[in-house]
Length: 167
Image (cartoon, rainbow, N blue to C red; front, side):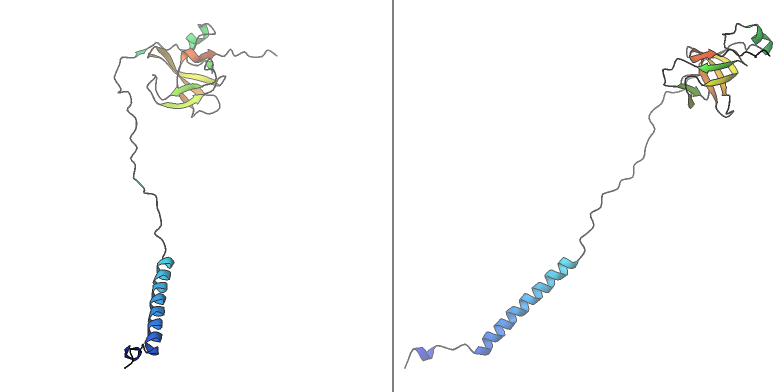
């Protein structure tokens, strides 16, 4: 007997079936890959945190005696020297070097600032004087806007001389 004939032969349909099976496995793997690639990647978001802003500590208000100076009457204003600040007089802001004068809600350096008055801006004195925190405070009212009122330190005021023109 011949030894070559005893070897079993592989049937050709088995080879074709093995190739079809391999192609089928490759096709399934390709479809899985496409499905994974087609999925939307998770959106990278920036984490958001809720922040609560706390105001900075402020000076604790302490009641300190304030001295209210005698308010001159309009009759007294006429006898005062022309450069003295008094109720009823007109003043302009000076000496702030362009930084502006803090017009405050009440007399005192710790009072809330209503607005800044610019150098050379004119006001009418409507209240005061009050001595507090080392300054003499006067309540001022803007000439063109009556809602712009506030307390300001006398150190930054200059009395305006008003003269009536002679015909």
